[in-house]
Image (cartoon, rainbow, N blue to C red; front, side):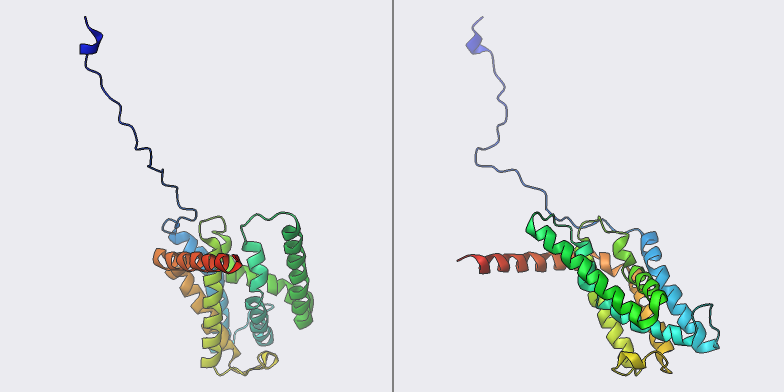
Length: 233
């Protein structure tokens, strides 16, 4: 039998110019768990309820009298301004050499500065309150720290916190001087509106909406591209 007469099946070969598509570096996260949203919102909702309880009924909880509730809003003002400290915690990029040293120096420097400022407002109790409010404000990020786009969610959470803080402070007629907040007559309404708003934002899942995260990723890529272009001669 002539071998040349036997039909041969040709294997499908990929074109030489074809290139395998790479997986995206920063994929969008899957739809969030509602339980995670609820857990993220609980601390803020509880704090807002404490302010509402004292504002409308005059009832105060142990270690949370009217003066301390007012002081907590001053500490929350410090928490919002500690965003660079949180970014150093949330940065996922691996650094080496001098960059790692600079990052560590910046981290511990900001750590000492913020805690010293908190201690000047009320001693050890204020330091503990500062740490607790930091966890409450950024708990949604801490529970999703390893998820894709976590740093972008942290930035968005900070931006909305600042916006809500400014809106509620203005709406309740708070003075510009933070030290005047501690015993102000409207500080309880300020705290109630602020913390309840943060809790509702967490429950809404806005920080994990795919459209919002896609916009943030696109903006970050454009910003990185612009930075690279500026460094090139």
